[in-house]
Structure formats: C-alpha cells, structure tokens
Picture 1 (cartoon, protein in one colour):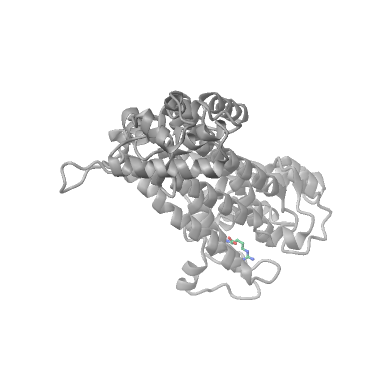
Picture 2 (spheres, rainbow, N blue to C red):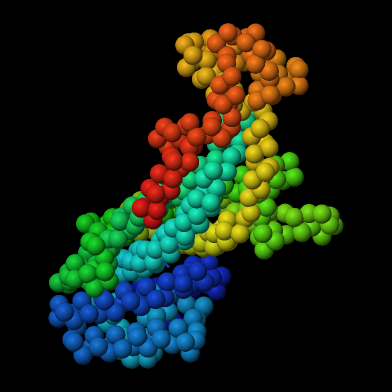
Length: 456
Ligand code: ARG
C-alpha cells in the first residue's frame, strides 16, 4: 500500500521501519473518537463553504458506515496501516472515492491525534470517576456497619489509641473523594479542543474552531495552535491523578494484607478474592490486594516515562509524542481493573470484631486517656503523662493491665485517682469521648459518613 504521505519521499520505507513507526496496534482503541472527530470536521468544512454540503454528507455517511462496520465486526482494523487516522481515511477513500481525500483539508494528524486523545481520555475519566464513586460508597457502607466496632489505631504500626473500624475506613473514603475531585479537575483542562491547530501554525482556510469544538461537546478551544499540538499536560495530569489514586489503593491493600494475616486476623477476604497455594494446603492468599499494590509501581513508572519523554521536546509536534499512548492507556486500564476487583473485595470482606477488640485491649492503648483523667483532676499534662507512663511500666513488670489494676495501687501513684478512673479508661468510653470534629466517636464518624454521602 503506497503511503498517503508519499510526496517528497517515495514513501517506500523499510518493513522494519514501518513496524517501528506504526502506532495502530495501540491507537486503534480511539477509532470511535477519530471517526466522530472527522464527522465534526466535515460538518465544519461544509458550514464554512470549504467543501459542499453534498460532499460533507458523503463523508459523514462513509464515516458512519466505517463506525458501524467496526462495531459489528464487519470491518477489521488493518494493522499494516501506520495509525488509526490513516486507516480510517484509507477505508473512507476506498468506500466513497475521491471525496474521501477532501476530509483532511485544514487539518493535520498533529491536531487530529491530540483531539482523539482528549476525547478518549474524557470518556475514560468518566468511567474511572464512576468506579471510584462505587468504591467510596462500598467503603462508606462498611464504615456505617462498623461505626462502633473498636479496633486499635496505630502510629509507627504500634498500638496508639482506640478507634473504630468505621473511622479508619472513612479515612480512605476521604482520600477517594480527593481523587474524584482531582480527576474532575484534570478533566476541565482536557476539555478544550485542539482541532484546527493543524500542523502547528493554523490554516489559511476560513475554519471555525469554536463551531467544530461545540459539535464535539468541548467546553472551549486551545488558545494557541502551537500549544494545541504540543500540549500533553492533560496526559501527565491524568497519569499523576491515577498514580495518586493507585497509591491510596495500595496503602489500603497493604492494610488488608496485614489484617488478613494470622497475626492480626481482623478481616477475612471472601474466597472469591483469594487464592490457594499449590503446595501449602492451609494457605489463603490475598493475591488481589497484593496485585493492586504491585501494579502501583508500574503506574508510577508510566508517569515518569511520559514526563521524561516530554522534557526535552522542542515545539511543536515530535514523533516522540506517539509514546504518550501506551503509558496513558496502560495506567487507565490498570486502574479500572484494580477498582473493578477492589469494590467487590471490600463488599464481601468480613470483619472479625472480636479480634479487633482483643487487640485493642492489649498494648495500653488507653494510656492517653489515663493521663487525660489526671489532667481533668487538675494536674498539668506533662506531670500526668509522666505518672501514666510509670503506671504502664509498673503494669508491664507485674503482668497487669490498666483496667484491672486495683485502686489502692493507682492511689500509690497519685492521690487524685478515684473509682471513676475505671470509667474513663473503658475502651468504648475512650472512643465515645473523642467527639472533636473528625474524631473517632460514633457521632463524629456519622458526621463523616453524612459528608461523604453528600459528596457522592
Ligand atoms: N501516530 C501519531 C501519534 O500518535 C499521529 C500523529 C502523526 N503526526 C506526524 N506528523 N507524523 O503521534
């Protein structure tokens, strides 16, 4: 097949060079955007009398037939074409004859590919947002179920203070809400049309970029044609928001993996989201969570790869930019796959409340509350902190816990101790007293749940 761009050169490229140069194996996923973009382009050309109305109709009918044939499977992508843009134009010309050759008037593949990418990624971001929303709702539902389930809260992975599992889960919901807001924000900047920038300098034809953009549903147009064909910030932004989202899923995965271990046994994943071992019959491995954690590395790599590809590029279009697709598509597909399995994994995860409570009962997790008790009795916090520390040390040496240490022993540390100390260090009460905004009390977690629901 002679090259469409044969002209100055013979177009007789080496077969290896053809393979190397080609992007159709990965950019064919944008066939719909490419065809819709071309339909709008034909309409605009006719509206501005650059081609006739009849020619535009022929082009649009031809493009429409290509779209439906691709969708039905009647037409297959020809992978020997250089890219999806060339493929569509070639089939169009085969089907409708010379009128097909008019489609590329006042357009270049440089603005065409930028347009296709923006349209494709806007559709993908909608899908990602809806998946993140479903996950946030699933986690919120779990949090609601466990708004009074006591567990140890950790810092440095050491038992720190009692919290509720609902409170812990809502922390992840807040991350997911920020992820949604970041993706929406990125979409705003993706939602401007580059088409009509042409190769880089604009065109001598009397085109209407605003009209063409409005036909495609864009909010606006790129202001500078050189930037229009060179800008891949929207890809970088999406890769970065996906990387952040994956970082959240990965942290969550890490906790689920830890909680599933025999050492913790705070949760049990459904059989549907675990695997066995080919040799150890007792195993139930959290592979899905591990893979989410593992894939996060590749998603980070995609961001670095594109940043590095772009860093040395002079304006305007350079073929290096074809490298944007594989990393962006890979991150998009990966995050969708991860979310797809994460949602039901969370929904079907059972929580072993007794183990969470037992873990919260060890480790002197209420020592801060013991210090707070003395502060309320009039002692400065630093002194209260010191006495409480000495009590914990005494308990460890004598195999006691704060809840059961006799009152006369308490009194030997400070005369301020009274019978009511046992109330103040009761785990449920420790949790319920933390009514500060955003805190762990049931009432406060309910407020967080309400907030999340209002956002979702
Ligand atoms: N396949 C190319 C890409 O993805 C399309 C643009 C080609 N432009 C060019 N001047 N060769 O970037």
